[in-house]
Image 1 (cartoon, rainbow, N blue to C red):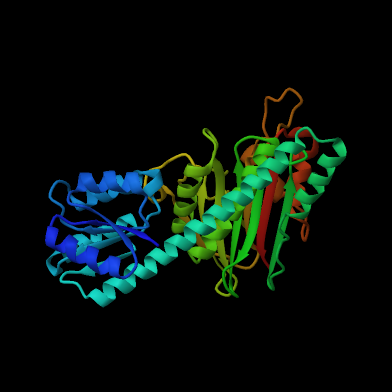
Image 2 (tube, one colour):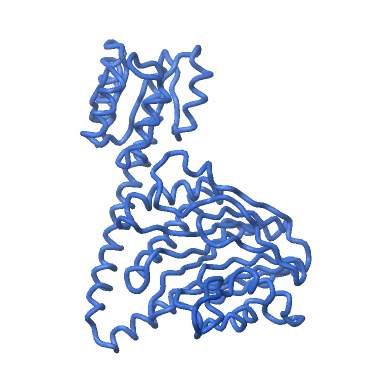
Length: 389
């Protein structure tokens, strides 16, 4: 049975809604002011908020901002109630991810149907999230036990870890290559390939803070979370990172974060687009000339601001024949090229390696060799190249 919070300063309206929703099988709590709404929501964790757009003590947009800034309320579905005269203000509330609205006076049948649909979806999401957390906690407990396990046990975990890494897809007219090298036996870098439909391939590369077993646990969670977000949001990249950031700020240990890049390649139109959140700038490679693609974007999991995703820059381009996109983690550019660890391989090292790659050879293999990643880096290193033939 779902719990609905009704917020309206008109007592008669609240009574009508309570009777209607209780008859439909919902539990109901009520509030008459914005402040009371916030307190009731914090105390009772409702499955849906039904808010009048004109509460007496606070502007609707200000109340929505406060609700969404609460970590425990960030994902609660909110429906707005408004008269026709409030249509202009109503449109602005969708900035805060309003799931629906209902117009006064109510169409009772439509109201009950909408609330039923949204509460069922929210309850299903909560159940799925609970199962996911239980699954990850189980994995964490198993991996923590491996800290004191024998070398043979750790070797077995390492083999499974390597086996779990995604395989590069085979795409007609493209060459997709991956070079994944964890620094230790278990790494904090991750990557993924997700087909959104028959033409659109989503690509993820990322790096979690820290090293070792803890980083391996977090990267598994982050990879699956981004994969889920891509499917749920159908490749809408800003919505993907908004969802991922909101989840990670609640679930990551204090001080941890996830740097990542999420891109989508349309294999039919050859359009590439991406958003970057804290990883090194990717490179657009034309022949053997490479230029960093600079966009704004900080790591996931550090900011709880509801509009954080609006600060993330996006890039898109058409990949012409012989053009490539190179994605990389910071283990490559931060590899040292001298024994005293005073000079890093850096972006120029990557560009020079690409420039000097022989025809028909792998540029990421050349970068790997020039950076001497087996000996000169103390971090995980991951590269993905997507080249149009």
